[in-house]
Image (tube, rainbow, N blue to C red):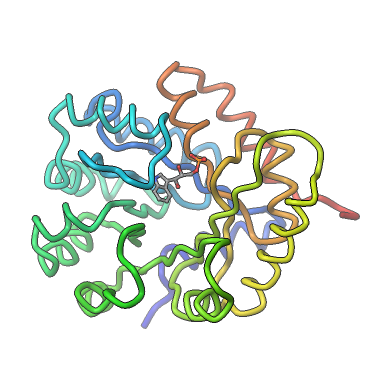
Length: 263
Ligand SMILES: O=P(O)(O)OC[C@@H](O)[C@@H](O)c1c[nH]c2ccccc12
């Protein structure tokens, strides 16, 4: 089997001594017609992949900023089907890997096998499903594998070590390490725990480890990515996009990509 687009993109960035930066955006926020333009913009900023949220009425793991973006997208009439169709329309015009972030319910409503097949046809490279626990993965894992869609697992700091090791071993494309570090500011004792947690995941993971949750500035992005392979930034990007502050997004991404020397 050939190298996946995610592996290829990540390896290219790492070969250029860059950290991996993965922004999260909500599909349909600002209208689905703007999706292509937004993906092109982020691609030009040098992101390693894009995490694309599917709006859902009951987004239990989303914070307030992402929830509001989801409401705007639903009000625009955005559905999983319309997103996949839109992605298919311009798949030849993008090179950046696309990772769908969706809850299980829309996938089941769509049909699990059809979901995996249509993802492949739309040029989707991976999926993140926050409410699908390890024990229930079999309803989807086989279909994803048949269609070469990476199944990215989420690790939570509160999980027991055994479970984290299992998630790290199974994850494909990358491992999403939920790393809540509290608020901004200087390092705290809490951050030392994040460091241990990320290093432990890196030891057990055969794919890159990316840290996400609560990253909103360059310093946080650099601090976290000094213990792993890069970061995922959601709320901050969603907010800046909504306000049309694209220059600030560019600065945040470019500032976060640089490797810290002597850290
Ligand atoms: O918004 P933050 O704090 O930058 O964190 C990213 C997160 O929002 C994004 O990856 C995401 C959106 N919805 C989720 C649900 C579960 C896990 C992760 C997510």
